[in-house]
Length: 498
Image 1 (cartoon, rainbow, N blue to C red):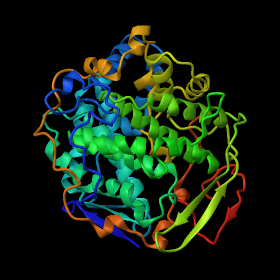
Image 2: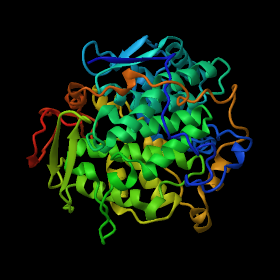
Image 3: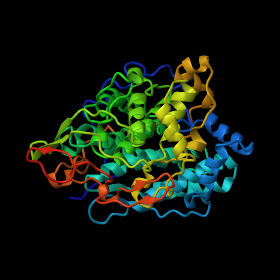
Image 4: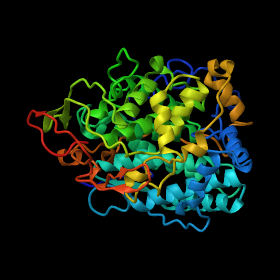
């Protein structure tokens, strides 16, 4: 089934906006960033703050390593060239007939990489290129379509689009209002709807990375559009969501040795790495607005990320057998059991480790030996285009060695709430433009967003799922999975797993 949601169709998410008018109570907001006083958010304030961008530029100018090595990866990438020209589409399709989403993710990464290169080098041509790409898309894109994978498109490309645009939001030629409208009316409705209805599936049908991608879209779009209610929904879902992307469900068991099981390690290595990268992205964007989710629930994410880092290097880790229901509500159903951690290829990697390792070891001065080893092995991290041609190689924006390497905080800095660093990082004001757009939770539901047919639920996207080696090459795969152990399946369900 192909479903579509138009730009002019927004949706009402029943019950989730209640009590979300402010961010203070119940959302983990340590303190309101000083720069966001007056109702907005700190800008730039998604994956990169003003201080982050200034640090990158200063370190590269001084010839400091590993920043220069990271910048060399950026400048060598074909997406980071000022000659890039966009190929915008009216409708982007991921999953099913007529797929064309390759165009979208390539253009998003070109916009992001040119924007980042501008901040580091000071070359205006790269900012102009990023703005042109973003403006071309916001002038044309009206809908996302496809089978269940359309929700992956909304989540992954929504958060990435917001981050690319955040780098140039103050450029005089950037169509800020129009871009906010696109995020609010094309991407956010699908992601919001997925987190509520899960495409008409039972709540455990979709593995954590589906939730995490859409959580990232809701959070990034909310910050970019200065929508407090949208940000509050995303943060609350991280803590209390019903789906498997909520932190205690993605990381269900904490062991005495300080490691915590990552649920998707029972599926396969590639998707587990994707999930860790997405949760790290979510935590970093929240941190830059004064919300500490990295440290939530006694650093639960640290324990889960350490577990995945140890396992991905080939280390032995425990895994508690997990049986999850799958299928459609009031439709076909079944159960699947993951009884052990999947096998791994120690050479498989994604550009996810530098951001997480630097937060815990440099910002917070905590021990994270498995994370630091993985970050060192993956360095210098590249970005989209460096990890194979398929969509999986573009799930993260990357370049963490350049962007997230930082000096170790003092003891006082490490104990300070995130709002202290955010206020210093973010500069003055809360961004330019006319302010928040209308929330995506303000109109009637869209059938295209809800989906829910049994054949739609089976879509996984794994046929377009590459493996990544430390050298950045594309490893051979069978069916999108590498060195998977066979698992016990029970019940009557069939079809591919989401």
